[in-house]
Length: 282
Image 1 (tube, rainbow, N blue to C red):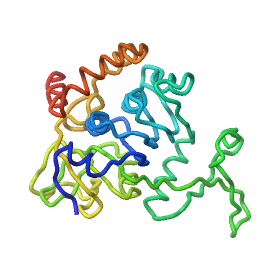
Image 2: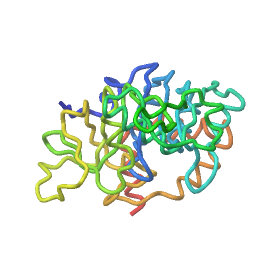
Image 3: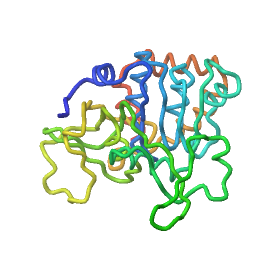
Image 4: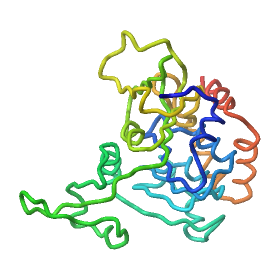
């Protein structure tokens, strides 16, 4: 049953040092506010899972919270590198991290398998690719019906998944509109799912029945954080802040500049800052 909590309490009660955690979102609905709260609370030694690590994981890695990243693509969307992640990989700064790279398809399949309660995902993939040479988690199985060789990877079963969504109902159900990505599967695959939302509404009456709704019994906690996906966008609420992504390329390129930015924009502020940033976009 979903509990309505402050963002501080939702993170403190569900994310623990050493957890395997997914902060998922695809193009929009990226849960920046939840990740910033984890940074403020200094919850570390984490294994981070995400299909497309972008600047939110760059920040967590740069603050030394990650020991391992399981991913399929890492970059600052439309701009370039994740410089803090690269510094950790190449120079062990602020700490060395382990990386496990998959294809997009494998990541999505692994979430689907986790959501289905299966131990592994089986699919056609990696044929002619060399990624299996550096990732021992990529294996092959023989189909018992056709004899075909298929790829297999372990299911993703995070200890906790954080996602952002547009609305929660008063009963604790969650509505996701627009591009869904793997948010639904990532939430269902986790032992604990925490959702930040733009607003709470009485119910979802009158909305199209094919919209993605996570029922309250799949969610551990909900925190109302207007603007909680910034600088990514939330369909129907605010646009992507392209300037913030461009700025991050410069900020993340220098260790001291990064540390100062994190102090001013994460450590010294609370989740209410997200609403003011979104207001500035309008």
